[in-house]
Amino acid sequence: MQKLISVRNLSFRYGENPVLQNVTFEIAPHDFILIIGPNGGGKTTLIKLILGILKPWEGEIHFHGAIANRLGYVPQFSGFNRNFPVSTFDMVLTGCINGENYLKRLSRDDIEKTSIILEKLGLYNKRRSNINALSGGQIQKALIARALVSEPVALFLDEPTASIDITSKATLLDLLEEINEKMCVVAITHDPTPFAHTYKHIACLNRTLFFHKRGELDIHTLEQVYGCPVELLGHGIPHTLLKEHH
Image (cartoon, rainbow, N blue to C red; front, side, top):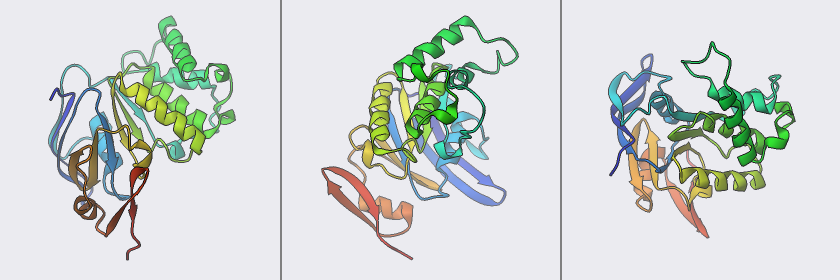
């Protein structure tokens, strides 16, 4: 298998609290990976370690090729300040800022790329609107546009379908499927149901990680991850539902 990123024996803790222990898996080009698990299981921490926002306590993250600075990140929608006084265009344009040009005027090429991305994602007619005038689905697409304008080789998303309506969710899923044709997509989610037809691997994480190809996940692994009984239900497409537990 061709490799994009290799994670080897990765461990991390906040103070004395261990969050990740001996996490090992591979990310391939054009992969579509879901990361699921309970709150506090280390999902967001794992992504921040890969992005270089945090440093591992143990283990290593190896990038195959010069891709360390070509990773796109879309944080949780709920943590985004919608009242910040900035236009949609300028917010997306900030995705062009990096360690080499942050003290320089952004180029004509950066402005052109931003226009193209906004047009592609159906936001060009909102480019002059303040971000607080956008719907939840439009905000999520603008955050993705900000990540894409830097031309990444992998896109990492934290709960991309949370806090948006059903119609916006369907549009977003179509967009991610299209993006996956050009790059790797890694998404944290509490609800894998919408991704049932698009994901290629699923990583179950609760301090330790269980990595599976599509169709390999079973109840035993889910119960290990969540620490409680799990029931698998199917209504046209597969999804998981946790039983009530104490």
